[in-house]
Length: 313
Length: 74
Image 1 (tube, chains in turn brown, green):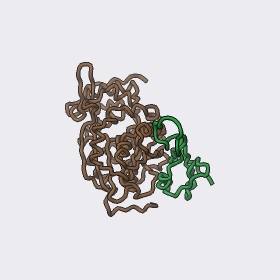
Image 2: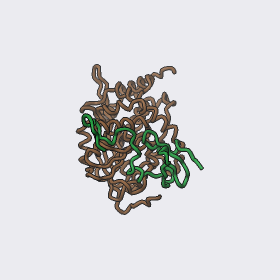
Image 3: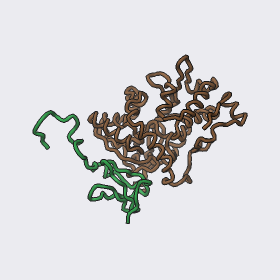
Image 4: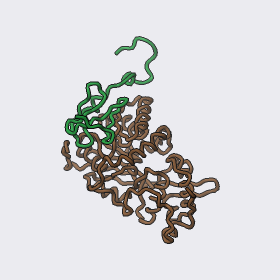
């Protein structure tokens, strides 16, 4: 494929109609509404699910050591928020290398870890054995959880909903499997509340990662969770960093196996970013260093006591 | 089960060799498509939904609870 040279900044590209990204897959409509009840049947997600597996199957071990995922100070902060208690039944959705699952198990919860990628589950299971923490593992999709309703005291999901084919279905499923009064801990990359900036951020994510579907804004999350009967108790936004620094651009793209074509496109977009985008993403441009931070949202929500789901429904 | 020889194991005994699917997990698993009850195959090779007859494979003690990986059996 011939290299597409990106000239000018994002706004100029839009204005000139010179849009070099026609080959990007589009999952979520640009107005950020997640797919609704009329979304395609779950079997048809097989394509996206397969690409997620292909991508994460080859990089499972990288996530055990990933500084942003393994950081114990971050995990401690999340556990202080979630407050798992001994004997709690917990579900960690899209567990990856199992960091959150093991943090809950360490505090006495009985944890079931779910992931779409078998290699990730093996990685989580071997980390569990190494640390002597028993967890059970199940291969499954967030959009149709294979568990009885009202079954879990705690549900956690970190750095994953932006990969979900149908996030609304996933939220309904989290609400279904939680018992009334049970708590959800959700951490994910966050869309920007400013529409124009968010469109640019979304493009950056999708150029980097072909399995990126959408990062939702904190206000969107609050609305989605509330309508599923999950009442947000705490919503925090921050910038995702590694060791307190912006993520180094080239290792960030290498982890997602970004094509060299897209690495060049991204590099051009970051270098020509408007001051507003530079601020929103904490883009750092210094001699010999290009880095950025990803906006992140951390939500603790509680299933309303009135919302007991029919276990068979 | 007592171990007669050697040093204590590096990992808990329950992890040695093949571990059957945890009974705790079996209690909470349902079919992801219709939430039907599941029956464990006698040879532990899979879980079959009583309502839609989808069979979910169990590989390395991990149940594969994906509709697009399941096989519908009579």
